[in-house]
Amino acid sequence: MSMTKPMPDALEIQEINFESVKRKQRVKSFTKGMLFLLPSIVLFGVFLFYPLFKTMYLSFFLTNARGETTVFVGLQNYIEMFTSPIFHQSMKSTFLFVLYTVPTTIIIALLLAVLANEKLKGIGFFRTIFSSTMGISVAAASVFWLYMFHPSIGFLNRILNLIGLESIGWLTDPNWALIAVAVTTIWMNLGFTFLVLLGGLQSIDSYLYESADIDGAGYFYKLRRITIPMLSPTLFFVITVTIINAFQTFGQIDILTQGGPQNTTNLIVYSIYREAFSNYQFGTASAQAIVLFIIILVMTIIQFKLGERKVHYQ
Amino acid sequence: MTMPISKKILFYFLLSIAALVVFAPALMAFVMSFMENKDIMTGTIPQSLSFDNYLKAFEQFPLLKYLFNSLVVSIVITIGQLVLSSLAAYAFVFLEFKGRDMLFFLFIATMMVPFEASIIPNFHIIRDLNWIDQYPGLTVPFFATAFGTFLLRQNFKQIPKELREASQIVGMGDFKFYLKVVLPVAKTSLVTLGAYGFLTSWNMYLWPLLSTTNDTVRTVQIGLKQLQTQEQLNDWGVIMSGAIIVIIPTLILLFLGQKQLQKGLTEGAIK
Image: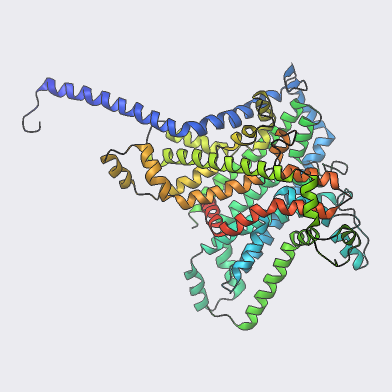
C-alpha cells in the first residue's frame, strides 16, 4: 500500500472509512464503559439521587400517613421548622454535640496513636486494643454504656459514691444527658480515628526524625515540628470525617435516651426519624433532612477544597 | 532504635493505663456476661462464673436467627459492593470514553449525600417494592459505594497499562482482562474493602430498624435493642451476653485484618 502513491479518490475513501470506524469505535467504547458503570449508576440513581430530589419535593408539601403528598404549602414547612423551639433545641444540641465529640475524639486518638507508634516489643497488642472499638457496633457500645451510666448499679455512679460524691442521673438529668451520649460516641469513634492517625504517623519518613536526632532535638520538639505538620493531611481528613459522623449520630440516642430528657439529646437525625416515623409528618421531616443535607454538603466541599490545597504538603 | 530503660518503662506504663481505660467498658460487659444477676446488682466479686446468661439469651430470644440474618445481609452487601465497585473502578482506570469525567464527578457527588437525608423516600421505595422484611430491602440500597470505587481505583492505577495493551493484542476482551488479570492482582485491596464492607454492614443500625418489622430478617443489632428493652431492670448478665455475641464476629475480623484495614483506610484518606 505504501509502495504506490495513492490515487486521490482512493485516499478519500480511506478517510471516510477512517471516520466511520472511529465513530463506531467511540460508540463501542462508550457502551463498554457504561456497561461497567451501569450497576453503580442505576443504584445511585434509585437509592440516592432520586430520594434526594424526592426529599426536596416532599419538603414543600403536607403528606398523609403513607407519605403521599396532599397539600402544597410552599415554604411553610421551612418557616415552621425555623420558628419551632423544638427544632432550635435540636440544632443547638447537634452543634454542642459536635463541639463535645470532635476535638476530644481527635486529641485522645492522637495521643494513643503517638504512644502506639513507638517501636516497642508487644506494641501490636496495644494497637489491637486501641483500635478495638471500631469493631464494636453502635448497639453493643450503647448497651455497654447504658450499664456504665445506670443510676444505681452503674460503674460511674459507684465510683462517685466510693469517693463520697453524689450520684449523677447521667441519662435523665438535662445537664448531663448530652455529655453522656458524647462520651459514648467518643469511645466508639476512638478505634477508627486511632487507626487512621496511626497510619498517617507511620507514613512519615523516618529520615526526618533521624536528622532531628542528630541536631539533638527533644521529644516534644519533634512532636510539634515534625509529627503534627507532617500529619496535617491525615488530621484534616479525620476532622471532617468525625464532624460528618457526629451530624449523623442516631443509634446511641435511640438506645440511651430516645431524644430526652426535655429534648436535650434530640440530635438532627433522631429528630428527622421521630418526625417522620412516629409523627408521620413527612413534609417537616423532609425539610429537616434538607438542612442535614446542606450541612454535610458544605462540610464535604470544605474537605475537598482544603484537602486539595494540603496535598502538596506531603 | 535504642531507648533508655526508664523511658521504656514510662511508655509501657502509659500504654497499659490507656489500654485499660479504653477497654474497660467492653471488659466489664464481658465479665458481667458470666456473672449471676444478684452479684451484678450488689456489685460483689462473683463467687462463680458460668455460661448461664448465654444459654438464657439463646433460649429466650431468636438470637441464632438474628445472627444468621446478619450474616446473610453482611455477606450479600459485601459481595455486592465488591462487584459493583470493582467494575466501576475498572471503567475509570482502563476505559476511555466520552462522559467519563462527568460520571466520575457524579461518583464524587454521592459522597455529599448522607443516607440519613434521603431516608424517607428510601423507606417509601422499599415499602412500594414490598421489600420490607425482605433481604433485598436490607442489602440492595448499599451495593453502590463511591468509597469502594475510589479505593479500588487507586489500586488498579498501579497495574501497568502495557499489560492491558498486551492482552488486547492476544485478543483478550476487557471483561476477561478484568476477571483474569485485574481482580487477582488487586486481591489485597479487595480483601480490605470486603472486610470494611462486612464490618459496616454488620454494624448497621438505622436502616435495619426501619426496614424490618418482625423476626424473619431482623438483624442482630436490632435484636440486641429488643433484648435490652425487654430485659431492662431485670437481667444485665443476659443483656451483656447478647452484646458480647454481637461484637465477637467483627472483633475477630478486626483483629485479623487490622494491618490491612489501616493501610486501606489511610490510602482512602490521602487519596
